[in-house]
Image 1 (cartoon, rainbow, N blue to C red):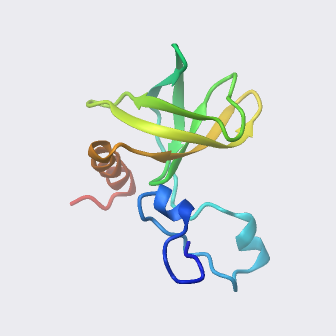
Image 2 (cartoon, helix red, strand yellow):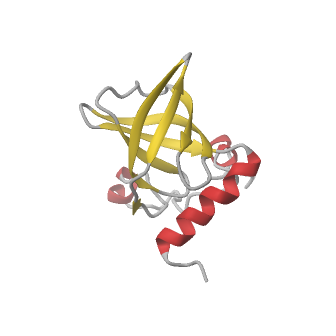
Amino acid sequence: MQDRRGRPCAEARELGGFTSSMGIADTPSRRLERRWAPRYDFRATLDIEWGSAVLRASTRDVSSNGMFIESVDPLWIGAGFSANLLLDQPVKVVCSVKRIEPGRGMGVSVSFPEQQQETYLQLISRLSGTQP
């Protein structure tokens, strides 16, 4: 996503420089589908840090810029939180709720402290089958 001057817009900067392939000439059906990164089925436990509480949840699928978190009591759209994705080496993710499936969970966008992003992207690479 770029602004009128061709620079990454705020959403693209938040995603660590990843940009969308959507442009002005996109078809209406493509505009309804806002996901541009492939999703991969992936189950892992996630500890959500919410104030002084830690909530246990799990992932249903992941992509390079988001994930779906299964939780009976999802947070609201726009809520921000950090979580630990419990892999062999835990990965801290910063999440923002983008959509809700009542009683099922929430779709979130993710960003990372710099040192954590590489571990997460290696996971996505393994799931996509592109890792050598």
